[in-house]
Amino acid sequence: VSKAQENLEIAKMEVTRSLLKLTNALGIDLNEEIKLSDELLLTPVREMNFQDALVLALKQRPDLIAQRQHELVALRKKDAAAAEWLPVLEAFGDYGKNGKEFDDVTEVWTIGGQFTLPIWDSFKRHGNFKQNKSQLEQEKNRTLELTRSIETEISINKEELESKRNQVEVAQETLRLLKKELQLANDKYEAGTGTNIAVIEAQAQVSQAEFNVVKKLYEYNLSRVNWFKALGRIRGATE
Image (cartoon, rainbow, N blue to C red):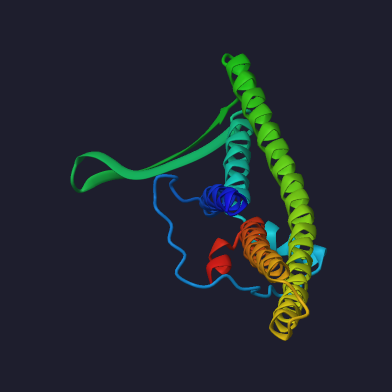
């Protein structure tokens, strides 16, 4: 009995940890209550090689999309600062009539041009350009670092998902074999060739195996959530 109570407390602690991990993976507020309405299943995930998964992630990851936008803004600011160095050539013209009397007027044409070259505030313009160029380089580095991070996430989560799926299959097979042993122990007991202790021990092993299957199913589904999150498709994990 004490062993069963110990296992129960361990199971409760595992459930609490599992729900916290699931909450974090889904990006849900930690104070929000989660209720699992459906049975945990070994829901298959469409097979996808690493390169295809990486291309998909780089296309739809919200954090990378936002970072690329930051880089684009920095590029436009740098280009605008560079344009301040360019000379400006302006042309203008005007046409009108001039005269003291209405019937005695002369047509007047005015044509001119203006060439502006930034000289006096060149140091200020140069400083502004260097600042914006530096900001652009920083954004490019952030984009590169995030891209490499996503590549690592895809690689790790793909291997983990495959590993967790295999662990579920092993746990399910173990449970199937232990149930056969339990049935055999029951048959021997009923036939008078076995003991009640053997039946109780077999039942305990089956219960532990059932708990292990649930645990491995949860770990697999958590890996599934992390996989879709790495792809930028968190909704896919809940479908």
